[in-house]
Length: 221
Image (cartoon, rainbow, N blue to C red; front, side):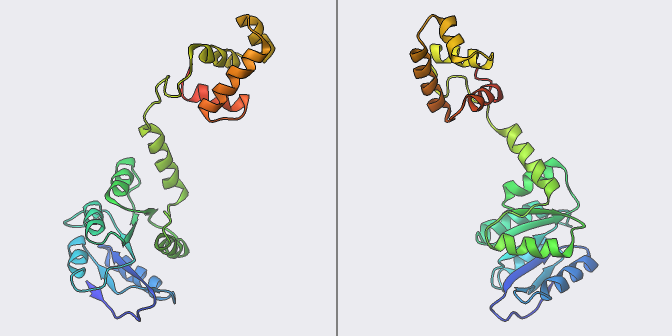
């Protein structure tokens, strides 16, 4: 582990990386920025956690996942527990869903893949310090896909649609106009209009297209 003085004004960025050359390169990259400082660069999570007892907590940590001893995921969780304000940005070769999911669940706010461009890493550090969640496009797409898969299916009656409102929604999906729906259900145009207004309000949409899209997407009919 290497520790260097800090002038007190720059963002504190720690590096946890077992590859010595990459660790040095990252430290040089961070120190070259006037608003960033790298007081600690560690080859393991154990060293980084030990440094918390002696050094001011970092603003941002660049964390590898495939580390000797404690994994980067466990290290992220422990760092997050000991220093909740510290933002952890993963920098790793691991792009599989499980690693991304586990790292985010452990408290990582960002996820970059090696090799990332130096300017991307520096930008990610600043974004993380501001409260953002820096990820490259590939990882961001995986995260969105995971959330989509994990989202609970909405029950058919979650929106409180009545049987008549559901019938009208089905006819909307079938492509009928309001006058055709009125004729099909043997009710007035005004009655259909009232039911549709209720459907839109319950589904939190404003247009027929949005209502149909939501009905199909969430299997409401």
